[in-house]
Length: 315
Image 1 (tube, rainbow, N blue to C red):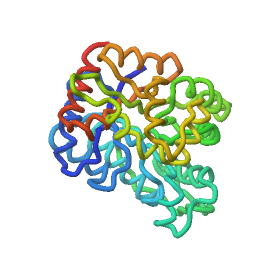
Image 2: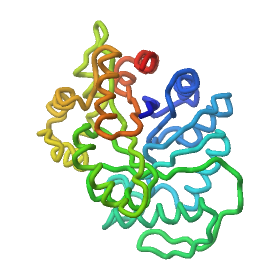
Image 3: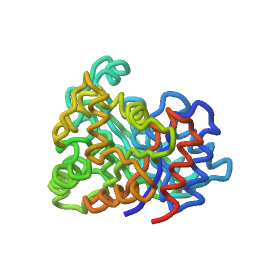
């Protein structure tokens, strides 16, 4: 299993990315990840870091499909691989129905169909094939011009079994977020294997929230700041309830305590956090992505970077 880090902020300034790219360059971290942002766009932020000498492996966890046509997504993905000089994990997800509706006029009636079409077109374009597809949500007729670049692995955001089965069929990486280790092992991994019956199972990359216990730090506030929006979102609430956590969208503070109690939100000394990360390895996760966003929102980006550095200091 490898360990990576997530930029613990939606950057409001391009320089916000640089300390975290430097952490990947200077530690055992495998890759720098960022989710969808509506401030400084994630692909441009990564390109900015590369232009400042931090050419590190990167991944998106995840970008929202409704924001860009698959042709543009393929252009951006291979461009970023070429700019960084490293293989890229290009993770995609459908987003919430409300968000999709603001862009398309209505939500995807079938997010699974939308993602199947999107990733299939992406894969064909990135592999240099001529595409002639007219799907329910996505159409493409044509091909990319040739460009040499490091490989692009396609990731799919996965929370529940149906999307996990689809990832098993068509993705290179299944990207999970806020998923307890036992849920990955007992629910998502079997669904991935079922979907991948005729091909290698995708790698599993899991975003794991963490915070080092420090004097004066309010852990309850850190956890709530990190997870409040997720604990209010129906698809996350449903996933966590399937995992046995009795969360409710109207009680995020209760959900935050359950995340800590279940070991889904890691805290303690750096060694205790590393022990928690090993639970994910034992559950079959191939790459843990450490997310200190709660620390960043509560105590600032410098404190979030310090936590990451301390956790990454030793195996």
